[in-house]
Image (cartoon, rainbow, N blue to C red; front, top):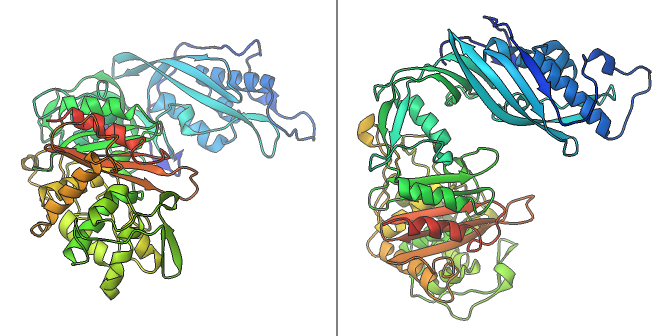
Amino acid sequence: MRSGVKVAVVGGVFAGVVGVVGYGAYNVLDGLGSSGVGGGSDTKATSNEVKTGPVTKDEIAETSKKFLAAWAKGDAATAAELTNNEGDAEPALIGYSESAHVTKAVITAGPAAGSKVPYTVKATVSYDGTTKPWSYASELTVVRGLTTGRPLVDWAPSVIHPELGKGESLETGESSTASIEAVDRNGNVLSKEKYPSLGGILDDLRKKYGQKAGGTTGIETWINSANADGADKTLLTLVKGKPGRVPTTLDAGIQAAAEKAVKKYDKSSVVAVEPSTGAIRAIANNRTDGFDAARLATVAPGSTMKIVTAAMIIQNGLGSANSPVECPSDVTWEGVPFHNLDNFSMQNPTLQRAFAKSCNTAFIKPIAPLGAKRDSALSNEASQYFGIGGNWQTGIETFDGDVPASTGAETAASYIGQGKIRMNPLNMASITATAVEGRFRQPYIVPKELDNRKFATASPLPGGVSDQLRQMLKYTATNPEGTATHAMAGVGGDKGGKTGSAEIDGHATSDSWFTGFSNDLAAAALVQSGGHGGDAAGPVVAEVLLAGP
């Protein structure tokens, strides 16, 4: 929590407010036409007939204009009455002045796009004798009330500010966390303005290390996190605190490449780690929802998981990189059929060639001889040797992967990265780093010495296993039949890669995965609904690796 005006939020509704600050001058401008501006009372139905059907262009213009005018005027009651959730809207709109301390507002509406109306807010925030301008853009949607038939603003916290979510509130006051100046491994300052993907990470670092780094508090406008353990998000700084210096393992050059690479595709994320140390060199996302999928996603990794399955096969004496395997077009496991992409098959391939072509059946058939061990073998391999699920102490919040034991057809699905397995790019970058380094080194983004936290550990891969995994990854990225060869064509040096496509329930297109290494850098990318691994995620990883050593 921070000091200043305190507003308790229960179920998305403010429980109480204190310290009222009177509004000053207000105005609303629009590009919606000449509909009049007034209160909400005259928009109520004048007969018992409830109107149905889509809202009209005139209704959209009139309702949005009246709502924005009432909000800009500080008339929370009238503005709330023009929404379809008056109980939530009114206290939130009251809080705009009473807890966020907005004293002036000019709201300019743009042309409607269907039922959506975009607008810009130019406001003034005043607190403890300090005043600062604040501007941003958002949008609202006009819908027809289910019971009244009236055109109403479809209420959501994002109407007030685009980054405001359910259960969150805006506040202005003295921050409770000290300011920080995060720097990369070479001392370059990292800011969310220059590296947008780092916004949430910098908030996490500030909350956790601001005081330890010797920083002081300032006066700010922020979003109160709905999560008690989450970091608040600063939107405006009225008075700067003295920043404390927080060192990170990030590399500004690689981070810049990662920021650029993810812009190629929507819902794309990438992470780069250093195999020899576990240091995180870059982490980036391109998502409109702001979710940091690079470190927090919990989705199936598809065939990139075959790195761990291959290690399990080798360690259990079921095969080796150069041993022959079967790759039929399909295989049945306890009555459930599994197929290769487009039902391809291979004649007498080695495990390495089946890995390079991403043959699903070749990574399911060899496991049957394990008997009762087959349901837990992959889970044990992932945790014991690759550190998955090991409570990583990276310095920021992360999801550390999950490979649970399974039964029936889900066991077979897990060998090819489906079933109950859950990963994100950070996990897969670490798996690749472990495969080529020969041992798990826990990823981290701030030095262990900063707070003496204990890193997760795992057993080294047995002799020869890492050499075979590296050989298979290199073949997949350099041989013409390898699925990673095209994406990695421009990457030089000692290199390897693996593609993956994960089918997701309800999605017409599979998730695109790719993981690879070049010299002492391993990277993994996820492009949700991106299709085949080499098509979308591959170019993202390649661009990041090119920026490495």
